[in-house]
Image 1 (tube, rainbow, N blue to C red):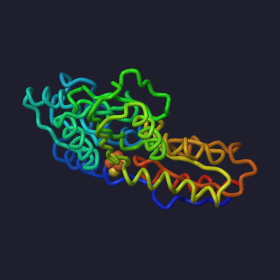
Image 2 (image 1 turned 60 degrees about the horizontal axis):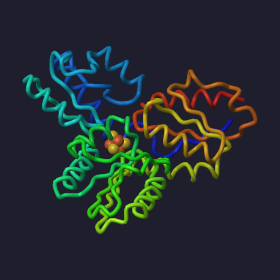
Image 3 (image 1 turned 120 degrees about the vertical axis):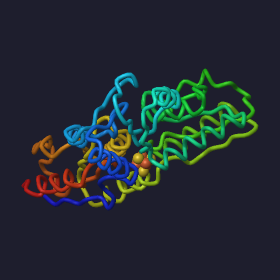
Length: 280
Ligand code: SF4
């Protein structure tokens, strides 16, 4: 079976930066805390835990330096940690930080803030925090509940979770405008360019391959978005490691395309290329 690998795979710069920062700190301190998983990839997390990373749910469990993960941390939690005089190492992705600044700008300038994304995702909850938890969150499936939106609201500002499907975001924004008809409608293009590039690569790959293998964590939003886009183009499978690949998925497949989420290490991709390359 022939294997075609997408042009852009492996860690994005935001994830790489967070891992580099934590690795350096672990060498120095031996132990660093993260509120929630540092990134959404269990393989990488397990490795970092062996090196001393401690993942906790609550600030009261922190006994040393805290690293802010790439998705950022809710401002209320940051304040809580500061009150306990703990050291904070900020590994928030610079692009996510920029979206946080946009949200802050909107709320302080009197806009009703709408965040398009998964209301349960830490990045979205944190963004809402930067809007003093007054933002309206709508999901990107076009089935959002718009009852809570005030018709005739004068100033509305919209941002998205950084890893959602760009096309769906555009559709959602158009629907929101129709529904609210605000006097002022400020939309920020906050889908991360790296995830957008990977989403676009699906259509390029789909001309060359009969099936897709997406590598990444199941909780990773950008990986799931990529997988959903692939599924619309042909048979697609999502795994975290090549050991989960099943031979029967690729019966009759001549060429398979490999893509990865932004928190998938290069060695996982290499292993998958080897595994698929050996299949007949
Ligand atoms: S996917 Fe984009 S926004 Fe998310 S961590 Fe990577 S570079 Fe930052």
